[in-house]
Image (cartoon, rainbow, N blue to C red):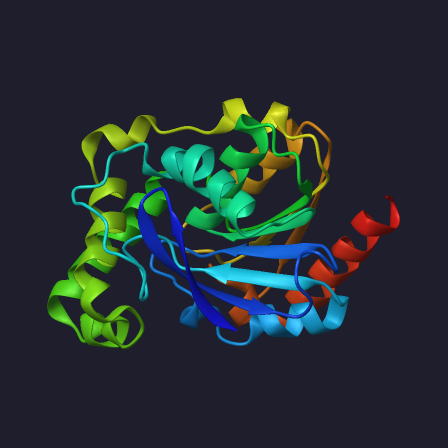
Length: 260
């Protein structure tokens, strides 16, 4: 079911799959730096069906069909999402129990929420290719994306998903990661404060981050974390290794709620 919620003064597009929050726990999906609801394709619906739990997918401000964001984004924009926007979204949606599933920037936002707020409804956390600090490989790949956006058909491809938000989505992500001060960005302070189990998924061929990212998360997560490294897999495990990712997530979700 496609709908809109007004969160922190912005109208955000949302999509629900499976049972509502008053009937079952909810899987909350947080997209990557160039993502939105549509770019998750059918993965949230498949995971909802596999687990029997509800799924809430949403596009952050400046993405998909949500309200545009103001540019330039601040360097702490992911902090704002995790500390302010996500808690209000979860409250407004009436979610009682949840597991967050965050991809790339969405995984970083989830870590900030889990370790930096009371996160009362949170029961577990799944990250795919999340970052907790800035690496040289990340900056190089984002610089290549900037060139591709300027010189290739990348903008036209993104426009299919973001429409009028296309430039907002790209620049709001790309400009921040390439800002000279972003080299100091670091989320490791939030990891010890995470009080729920974690599943950390990373592709062995991730072009946006090295193994140092998941290893830092696993070694510092406050309630422990399981690491799954996927071979022949780049930055998007749910696309590059869909079956393995679905199975790993389904197993983790079942274990989390079996412990209640």
